[in-house]
Amino acid sequence: MPGNWWDDPREVMRPPRALIGGEWVSGGGLRLQVLNPSVGGVIAEIGAGTVADVDEAVAAARQTFESGAWAGMPAGARAQILWRAADLIDAAASELADLETLNNGMALVAAQRTVAQGAETFRYFAGWCTKIHGQTADVSGPAGTFHAYTRREPIGVAGLIIPWNVPFVFACNKLAVALAAGCSAVLKPAEETPLTALRLGEILLQAGVPPGAANIVTGVGEVVGAAMAAHPGIDKIAFTGSTEVGKKIIQASARTVKRLTLELGGKSPVIVFDDADLEAAVPGAARGIFTNSGQVCMAGSRVYVQRGLYDRAVEGMARAANRLKVGDGFDPASEMGPLISEKQLERVGGFIESGLLENAGLAAGGGRLPGSGFFMQPTVLTSPDPGAQVLREEIFGPVVTMIPFDDPEQVISAANDTDYGLAAAVWTRDIGLALRTARRLKAGTVWLNCQLVTDRMMPFGGYKQSGMGREGGLEGLDAYLETKSVFAAI
Ligand code: NAP
Ligand code: MG
Image 1 (spheres, helix red, strand yellow):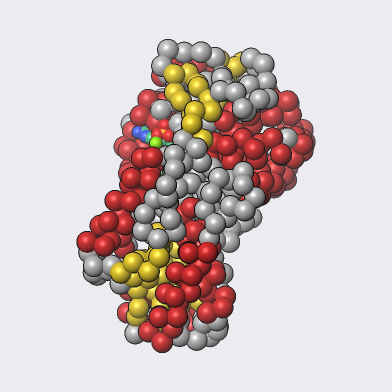
Image 2 (cartoon, helix red, strand yellow):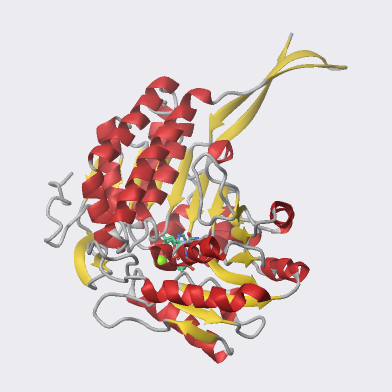
């Protein structure tokens, strides 16, 4: 590591651009600037990763995989290393959280929570290392009698591509499971938020992950990410990000028939029935959209409220939006930070304009906040035209659209009337209605009288264009394993 680049975050940091085969790679021609979105200023300059870096990282990952240095290590020893990584994350927690807030803008308490989550994810998947095994079967027929068994084997080299909205959590989610399965990995963080992923690379080396088992290449998606998606040396891609880029990855990976897990966008509905506890539903729905400035794939961005509660629900959401303290993540009073970039600010502003053009009412917010940071007001839109863009497209900002409904049947069709299917929430005191509605919602996660709950023990992923495959739990681990059937004539 070229000095501890993270030691003085008041200076412009100069982190390395890649970790390849246990060696840090610095410099590079094209330099990318990394910003603090609360201020708009440059916090780091980093060389852009190259296609050649991807080739070298894949070669290092392949070499380590085939050598058995990681995949062939006794499972208990692999578990201990991943557990040690978790302890090292905890030991560096305050510095990691500072880096995350500086680079992503999220409130410091939120960053601290995400760092603790990252450590827990390593512990959870450390536990799986010693529990990977196949099944046996006694097979007999005209061809003879056989002792047959399955083996679960790591897929090989996994390419991990992650977004900027919760950078450390995604880096840990993807690396912990890939390594637990015995794969070697190449991770590409988002160009906006490379810092905590690089710091994690250092922690993994320190924990004893062998050189080449966990590689990192920073840089631009169209160069580094695209090279990974098409690379013949990568066996599997796990991607989190937009549906648009997810489709490009499907195409690029088709040539080599890569295994894919895709965690893509969402337009998650929230249904509030007339008998709901509004005291819980309104704060729940407000958290469901304004957490992390709405930059959450599972954000509840369409809130359908039964007519009897609609006016009070709109008032409540508007009050919640107006009360939220928006500011620099390092200010302890801040409850909501900035958006990630000027570009996202413009994009989200464009959606609000389109909503107003399509006859939405504006109950709160509506614009950016003054200053050099990328701050957007928490915004509540009401009753746009049916089929309006704000009801169809993922905004990825603190913008909620509220719609009244009369007929409980019709609201289920409206909730499912979307290309996405990541998550959905239902608020009602009627347990039967809640469970019946949960059955009919086409979403990978359904929350009943709660929102935004996830856990690494539970599979997470999307129906329809929200993705492919699941992360978390045993299904998440399965996505990094092949199954081999072995027949022995006896
Ligand atoms: P994105 O373009 O999908 O980027 C996600 C990751 O994919 C980044 O690491 C990106 O690299 C990389 N990438 C970009 N183009 C690629 C390509 N052709 N091949 C392989 N990898 C590629 O997301 P974004 O630009 O960060 O945000 C755009 C929109 O995506 C958001 O407004 C939001 O709607 C959605 N989004 C969804 C999630 C989610 O969790 N579901 C998360 C983030 C964003 P670069 O960073 O270098 O571009
Ligand atoms: Mg991008």
